[in-house]
Each structure stands twice: as C-alpha cells, then as structure tokens.
Image 1 (cartoon, rainbow, N blue to C red):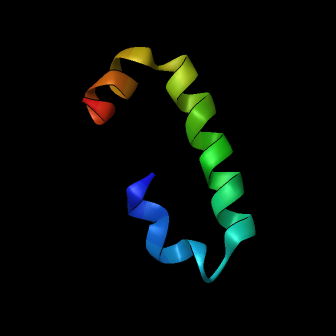
Image 2: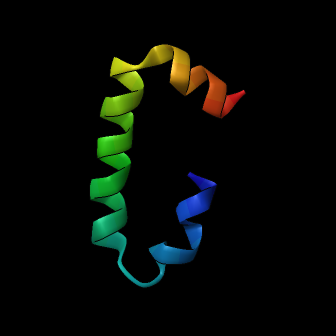
Length: 38
C-alpha cells in the first residue's frame, strides 16, 4: 500500500478503513490483485 504512505501520517484511521476495503476487493478480484502486486 505504498501509494497511501503519504496519507498515513495525517489520517491513520482512514488508511486502515481504506486498506481493509482494498483487501476485501483483492480477495474478490484475485486476477486484478495479482496484476497490481506483480
């Protein structure tokens, strides 16, 4: 989640929520997740 690093210091709570949402999306859309990671 390197693209959220600049926001973490400002709003950690929002990042945690967004990170969880991203994980749920990654679980649902595996092919897209693999493309982003690799």
